[in-house]
Image (cartoon, rainbow, N blue to C red; front, side):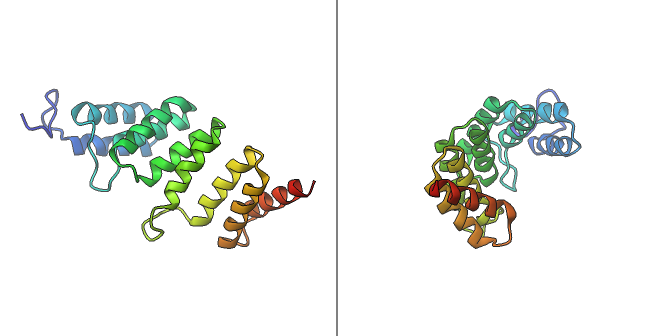
Length: 175
């Protein structure tokens, strides 16, 4: 049997199952997407689409959107076991850690995103600085929130969210 085909449906390759998952994800039809991505994982847990994505990332995203944050963390972590530099999985996992008030872990993931060469990174540097600053704000570490907020503001001086972070951290340090 060709490893790229399923025994249940030998006419459908892993790549086609993956594409079905992506199409259903975009519809959005979460249940059909989960079924397709689960089929991909059953066939080859380490499968990566030519664009670098893997089924675990999409399952993590679906679970995150549905509010199943703990399981989303597991899926993003599995995606990162396939590609430790997957920007979207790092951001997804970091966001889940943020929601769970696990700032130290969130910051570590966001800093790893910063370590990706800016030429290859999709997310603007200022946005990453901001989410790091926000995690320090949530942790009430005002000096570090201010530091990262200022870095974000240096990248995008007109961004109101970045200004609010800097203003709040500055006022908390003064008081």
